[in-house]
Every structure is written in structure tokens, then in C-alpha cells.
Length: 224
Image 1 (cartoon, helix red, strand yellow):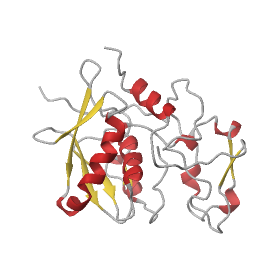
Image 2 (cartoon, rainbow, N blue to C red):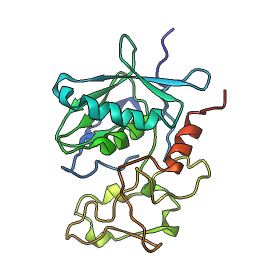
Image 3 (cartoon, helix red, strand yellow):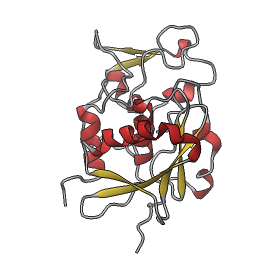
Image 4 (cartoon, rainbow, N blue to C red):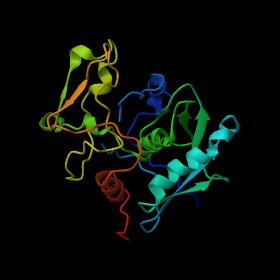
């Protein structure tokens, strides 16, 4: 029996929505992303997500594998080359980085552009696994201030709060899923200000401890 994605979060008509492909070159895609309900199916506390890499991205294979390893070395989530599975991550070439949030079914695109580094690719895979941006949490006001007057016109949606399961974990300014302070800035001034001094946001070098905890809770790692 083939395992398939659970398809009950988005309406069917939304699966092909162009919203996820709204790209800002060398920036981030839309923040229609904490944890959602449409998950990749696992067995006995282990998860293997099939993937394939488009031929146009052959030169980026090493970067993509490094990004997947950032996740698999810290969690119960493994990635295997696609054979005949119904659902898989399909890494495709594009101008920037983007992904759906959660398991949408079929050949699910993860877009990789020329300026998407290993950490950016990992960031998008985390979205595909079901995690929203950290700064979209409803409790963000205790930790950051959004400076709306500095945001590029029409990009305000990237800073909207989103419903999602935080698993009782504290807000994480260090998260690989958090925007940096000047993302989508119209004037070079900050769009996000941390309320704690000396904090750097927007790192893409590693999964924070809380990123790892959230993934492990989301996919019940070690709970079989």
C-alpha cells in the first residue's frame, strides 16, 4: 500500500494557486506559512519523504542534499530518491526560492533559484514539511515590532499573522524560518525590529534548537 499525503487543509482549488510562486529575487517568498495540518505520512515514528531533482538543477544537487541533511541529521525525517511514490518533493529551477506549506500531493514543487544557498533551500523544505514563518506567530508582538511604513508596497501580506500550532514552544528569533530585519524593505530601513537588543534575525546557516524541537513534535519523532 502506498502512503499518501493527507489533503484536508487547503481546498482542492487552492492547490494550483499561483500565490506560492510570488518571488522576490534574493529575498523570500510569501509568508502564507507555524505548523499546519497537512503532513507527510510516517510509519512508526519515522518519515521518509521522496524527492527528485530536475535536470536543470543537476549542478545544485550537492547543495540540495546538504539542505536535506540539515533536517535528517537532527530529526526522524529522512529523504529518499523518488521511484514510484505518488507524492514527492520536486526540486525545480526558478528565479528565486519558494514552496507550498505542508504536503499538497503529487509532484510538489520546491523552487530553487541561482541565489538560493543551502540554508535557503532548507528553509523552503521546512515549509514543505508544514512549518510557517516564525514571525507569523500570533504572539510575535511580545518579541518583535513590524515597521509597516518601511515595507515595499503590496508586500504587507508577508508580515501577516498566521494560524498554526506552536507546540507550546517559545518564540524563536534564531529560527531559520524568521525573516531578517530588512526583508522587503522599501527604503533600506528595518521592517522588523526585535524588542531584545543585540539580536540578529534571519540566519540561514543552521536549524535552531527550537526549529528541531518543533519538527520533532510535528512528526512525533521518538514517540513510537
